[in-house]
Length: 253
Length: 329
Image (cartoon, rainbow over all chains, first blue to last red; front, side, top):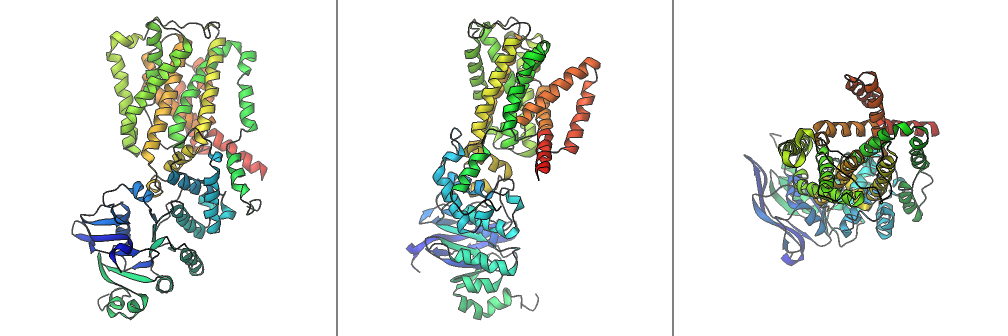
């Protein structure tokens, strides 16, 4: 892959907490339209990597580039504006808002109209249409006006994605989107992700290898903060090191 | 939700419904005129209630909607009160313009302070607001030459409202004036909370951490609402000055900051009318209880507060809303 093709790149990202190295020289690239999976055993630094990319954590060294621009020191909200969105492993929703309100809010924030205290919310007609369109796409239209806290867990996971989509991302980082969702529903959830338009590049963290092999076009294996291997699913499946480390076949494990 | 079909018009209708005036609101404003007819001897108390309610409304905007807990909002109430008083001492006694200047002054103070406020949360936030409140109080106390210190500001002379209505002893003008401003305050607050801006404040309250993840410059939002809230608090303070024609240090006191939070919690936060209902309960209770025993009336307020928080954690209005919802289903 040529360098110019990558929408998102990290260059030698390193981060340590004392003696613990959560990211070691991580260089990855996400091409346009990617459906890449980030896998690795617990504590490999997958969420930390997402946090480093989105700005919740600041790297000790290395760079993050979005569409060629260096965003390493950019504040979180501005990265989102630049087209970098994420979801959270543990639901980070607005419990007392309805999905409709939450997504309208995200749409208004993107359009820069969320600071207008003199305009009634219902006058933002186009934003409301867009928000409802996103909810419909995620099949949340039936529960759009119920309080978020009363939604089924799987619906809340979908709303996580909906909030990210409302920012119109170029790059979408999904931190275990199906975490805690029953097996049957998780396939359904991933088919929603697979159906996202090609101009959104997706990197997702997932533990269920069946889902990973089914939906990822490329897989990055992370072990104790460093990239062990990045390759096509078939290569990953056959690789002995991945089997040893990730699938827990190591003798001492 | 069966009634929500797949039609695209529904979400619009639902959002519009959220901001509609309700029958309860209409009933409340009609009831607000009752003191004129039935309790003319209590008009002074009624105007005090309206002023406290406006102050509580300003606190609801930041505490109830944006989740900024404050124990020092009397700072802005007092600044507005002193500002309004000093304007008349300088020779300008016209009430409306005095009110606006006092509000603008308090809002400016709120804007300056907001830079610190949006950087802290939880306990630190409470301590900062408390600290700022105490600071302002002692500053006013020390600046004897300007504020009159513990004696209060004497010689406040307010001209008749619209050059017609004198601030009479019975409080007809005072209550009418305070009620009109409370009404304007509610209209402004309604507009704010039912805007996309209001929605973003609720977003901050519900999940601060998510806000940057949807690209929100939420600190700027908090600064805006803090400034607006300080301005409204200042107007409430100025109202007190103009209707009583005196300013005391008490307007800046911790007691006032704490009382307004108590009123808000009694009535219910994040509902606009919670602070108003709370102010009615608190002030009427204080008036009646102080009549029975002027020394120990806070005992009953304490008891009432505990009872409400235990039985109706979302305040009187929250409890009523739940009751109504139960009856309807």
